Length: 118
Length: 174
Image (cartoon, rainbow over all chains, first blue to last red; front, side, top):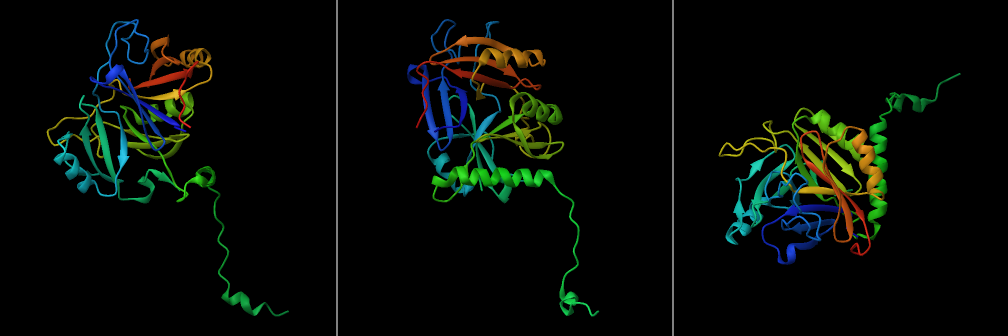
């Protein structure tokens, strides 16, 4: 059972809606829809503001070797927002989905930074 | 009366102050391990989301008081880690070292955008009313979607959180 759900706004998804699962994460992809569309998650706000892809808030994917993962993704033509940076808990890099939404790849270098909870 | 000859070998007893947060964290880990018993490694991946917030203290208070998150650790002024069930929420402050640092081209991350976490509630009307009366800004009131009713609220930095109440036809992966 998915216990955690994240909604991303994307430009191009068949039928305006897709539900993906990765471990315990449910990722809901929705394209912006007009007011009155049956799908409610990506309608404009009451004041008319449309929903758009982008921003900086993102989900993270833990990888054992961020450099190797980045190399494979780059070879596959995936866009990067930055180069690998070393933070306090680990090394990280940000890729973009085709709509420009960020996804963070994270290689923990401290045990408490691991996604898996003992 | 002669003392126990082994006393000389015993280490002195050092009183240790109780640390409730340690006990709480340990309890949570034990529970998570039991829950994750079906997993061969006994480990559970915690889906993790990073949100950018302008004021760490305000943000931690908001997520813990209004939405039922628990504080796992806080490293002021730049970072905090919260949990809610299986979700790990990282809060980073733009412009400070760590994930909030500027990119190599100088771009600084910022709060906001439309991508968001969803929090499932059993009674959306009641939840929204309680949040509203606590002063939480409501970005979009209740709308009916496919298989859910939903609303959007904002944290103190303007990040969106979606509240959903499952309706008929709601899909749950088993």
